Amino acid sequence: MKRNGQLSTIITHLGHGGHAIADTAPDAGQLAQEGWTRLSEVVQEPTDATVATTDFDYLFPDLVGKPDAHLPAGSDDEVTTTVTALNHLGEAMIDQEPPADDRSSPIPPIYTYWGQFVDHDLTAATDNDKVISIRDTPLPPLDPEQVRTLLKNARNPALNLDSVYGDGPFAPAPTDPDQIFVPYRTDDRAKLQVGTLTPVTAGGVRIPPVDDFARDVPRRADKVPLIGDARNDENLVVAQLHVAFLRFHNAAVDWVRTNEPQRTGVSDVFLRARDLTRWTYQWLVVHDFLRTVTVPDVVDFVLGNDADALYDGTFMPLEFSVAAYRFGHSMVRGAYDWNRNFGRPGNNVLQNASLGLLFVFTGVGGLGQNPTLPSNWPVEWNRFVDKDSLFPDRFARRIDTHLSAPLAEMVNQTAGEDQHNTDLIALLEHLARRNLLRGYRLGLPTGQAVADLLGLPPLTAAQVAGAAGPVATAITEGGFATRTPLWFYVLRESEVKAQGNSLGPVGSRIVAETIIGQIRHDPTSYLHQTSWSPSQGVRLPDGSPVDDIPSFLRFAGVLG
Image (tube, rainbow, N blue to C red; front, top):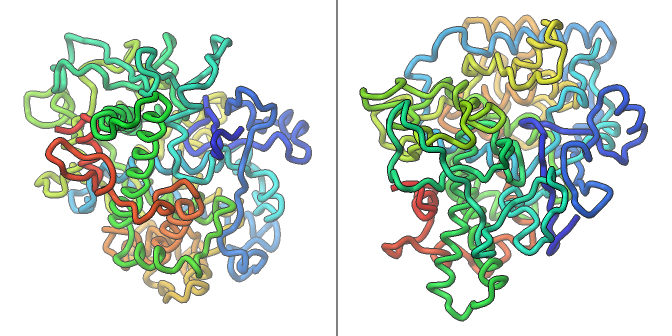
């Protein structure tokens, strides 16, 4: 369904990074009987019978079908050998011991989860094992045409915040009590509804400002989030960031009414506040997020070379969604300095908030048996945005080939599976193995092939292997030193070219070309307004513009 030229889809129960088979795909009925998931079963379209989708395709079509540009897949034995080697490499990538302090990057943790929020805004259809079937034997790569036909994106390829706005404030009220919708305030239809905290007396103190209880996503009585994408309630960091977007829009409504009094109608005020929120978000994605996670000058290069852009705006690139943009997985910490109850100072309940707990205090995790987020669990964002902190655990991990240990046991990925099938459960819980096998299954090119096509010097075999250790052994024994899985290549390139402090040249180009391309091809984006910048947007009380992520959070009223 399209409203005002934009796709509007409510995603109700699609897992993180998950995807489903398009209902219109050939043999969809038979595949559904075999356990594949229909797209219509995980998204909600209130009026159209067919869920609107966009395509996935390859960013580098010249590499499609070239055996030397891909991992070996010429025979069943070759496929089996490659799959075994990929599993060994994935196992080696997960830390077996707690990370040392020097594994920290100069990037604050907010960028890890801002990146995840962007991912949910752009894509919904890349990870469900029942569709990609990484459990198959011998697991040969799919034919590219089969990938194009079956794999569909349930998100509009634009940074338009459809997960925040849903169908808008003037959509008919749902008559089905099970219908998920994005609620707007009944006393002011221009504003989004925000959920309230549950007051608790145990487990520490209330998080300042103690009288501000509007710090959860809105929920039904059964804890289901009333938001446009249920994936934004899978971990508490992204859920709290979603709250910040709800509140930013509401603050923008107040700003418009104060500073643009000629706008008197509810619709006019809402649309103006929505535009200002979207444009601010898009500008920050380009000029704060991308400039932080990519090599210097790549953002300016991509912005200034639209005539030679790699991406034409009509599809979601697989090299981005299944490989390069998964660099954020390596930035995830096993625990965070979360707030004064679960972090510093020393009079806290716990020394930190583990990644496991951040999955518990969401609707999927049960919210610790509370109806909404308890008052001792809101984030203190100052701990996530400080670039000058003296504490290593207030930074993201480096972008490298070592993932945090909890990412080997992602138990939320195995719901509905036979728990007695221990080999399958271990695979589905293991993020690194899943990423590598999925990239192989979808026929992604090697990192070296992409580097050559971009005219960039590829990593040497020694650079790909790295220092002696389990990863180097897996690379060498698997034959990956000169034909390297693209996801691993992007991570290793960051280590070699940028010391893990940003993406390297290949990763930066893929990520910047895709994201800026999405914005460039959206006729409603900030790039299509006349020289728009935050100086023309909302202002903080002191008159300063919202020109970085911390000031975004301050305007939303969630960062002091």
